[in-house]
Length: 281
Image (tube, rainbow, N blue to C red):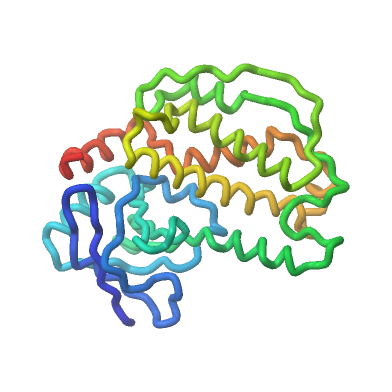
């Protein structure tokens, strides 16, 4: 099987000779100057529809690289993965490294957020009376504020940045969402609320690196949430299609995605801190 060799670039050090075995017809896994480290993730919570390629076996003959993967992935809990991205992918193609317990080795998968853009293009080509992306216009999506999910976060876990986030005010509104534009606005508001509760806001005091990271998180979450909404329009989900969709359902989707892309459990803080300390961040 052909092998692709890449370098993992962190804030201070580069880890070379990362050998990825993949078939010739793997379109998303390609040779690149390097992969940039983004963050630690719980790879078990990554939505399946985002996985475009893999899993592929990963090897290395470089002692420093081998030690880095052992320290970052093997010793911590097995659910922890390394999220990396291609430098020229505009935030759409990512590679996640993780431990395959069954194979007793490191593997990687490719994530492609361009899949949502392709679905939007297909929708534009469809007849006017067909909407393959959002719920049909004649379906009412009740807009009812429900902050239970975020309240539970504040009560049961410490925030990643040790920032005391304000508790969202509970409001009641009878507005209904009829159009894709209203759904997109609701998703954006939920994402911003979730980020603010985690202490992640873009301000004049934020570093350029933090601003870029927050924008990437916002883009990934919005794209994945829009794609996840398609499940309410599938023919094989006839039961869901006949039920009224509450905003709380959309809120659960956004919160689940933010937990995947942002949250690191308190028990795993030492893992990411160890990586950043060793890299001099």
